[in-house]
Length: 332
Image (tube, rainbow, N blue to C red; front, side, top):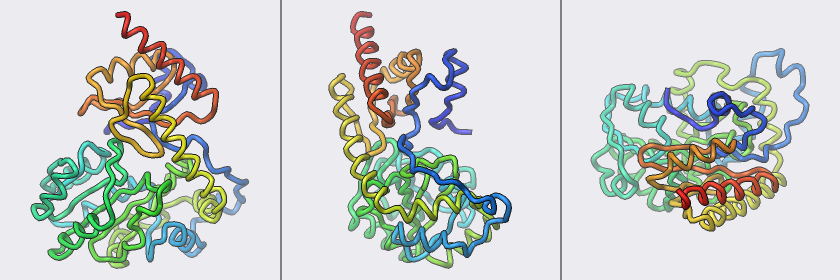
């Protein structure tokens, strides 16, 4: 199992701090979740049904011609490599490590590349995997660049796989509307923007033939009935979505400014998180954890990802903890 953010109970045990006393900034999930209504009993009692309106609501929200609901985009990340013969695969690095892990596990020949290397070397690969915006680096790509990559890959039966888990705050940059093109696959996650990570719901936007192959691979009932009910309502709440996009963009900029003010200039980021590269990342992670603040530590390259605080008290707590931590370091 790879390391991920959100291991709060493990941190609570390690540092002897009760879970409710932590400020968890380790995941990049929106800390202000969409307000879930009461769930009807039938959603728990009956098996999920494909014609309940979720697909139509999701297509409308994402602007995708066709899509498949899955148990979080992670389910698709693990299954898609099984739908290809042995391939040469280029994966953006640093990036969400589950992509490389899944393609390597299925026996594909893998190369981890920086963004400019992937773009320049596209003809060396059968599959290119990008995270847009990247997690944790925040790399962004122009639509014309992405469609150009897709065209070159698709011309020889290749795939361009784009993970847009953190795209919801800037939907104008999404390629979901283009995802009916053969060889273009776009992954979306409902957990990050709506703050519903526990629902384990994601969507694969792609050409219908590929979606059918993936559906056959994953089997029935990929998303539970209660999650399907909640997502239909969330996708229809356009007022909340518009307000939250503005709020997230503002909060992402605020977090970048806060880190900058403490001498931790972000190396990249998005509306959901900021990323700081430093040889002292592990020491900073440890010092914050002793104060009940959990960040996401990366080893290669040494770096920290900071998610968004959820309210004024949490912002003040992070500010004070950074000041204390950095003051200690300067005196040591």
